[in-house]
Image 1 (cartoon, rainbow, N blue to C red):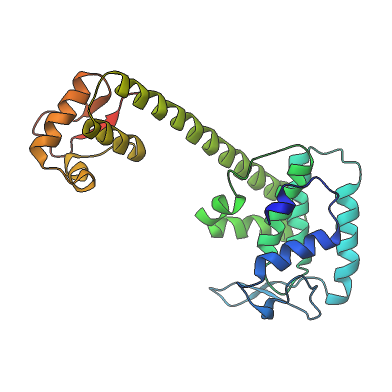
Image 2: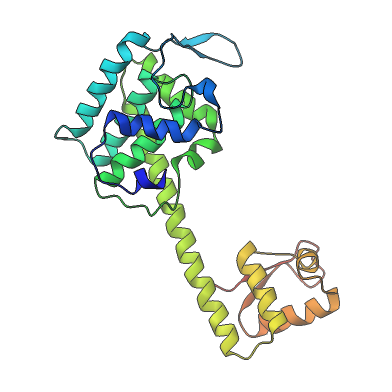
Length: 256
């Protein structure tokens, strides 16, 4: 899969079929017909009500619609690459060209479209991570298009918010990693021993920790940890958060 997401070659039907082939092979088995367009009519069913909520185009229309989708991807776009990628993702889900694995194939297609337009995310995230947090919201955004006579506005808002959320989280993680590295470098330079530095590294990784959580992670007795935390607090590497020494909810966070 990395080969396709690292390529700026034109997106062809075979590209999409190969993405599907790699996605479902060994996961969904041969029942998903890896890389093959469906030859049967399929249906989208609401698992709670067991009612059919969408009937994709008949199988004989799939090859033509996929050719049209690929041609549209390569046509000169007035829309921004982000909007175009969102439209391509929805359209593949709408055509539902495969027996199974259409959603994942569509998500990778949108990422490939963005990569070809110059958006190199270095594989630092996948849109599926955002969708998996609230699957009903994802399905509602798609179904909303069908219920609004193929008005893509709601879907594109959902798509762009998901993309911006993922990018912001990648930025936050990168900035956090830089801050952590800087704090640990300062701790080493201050002459701290291995155990307090390991304790600081644990708090940096977790974001915060109570004395009990530090005990479990560091396999140290409470008295020793209290001394080491006191040193880290006094040297400005850690902050104590709580109302007082006996506060049972007290915890420790790395200094910002």
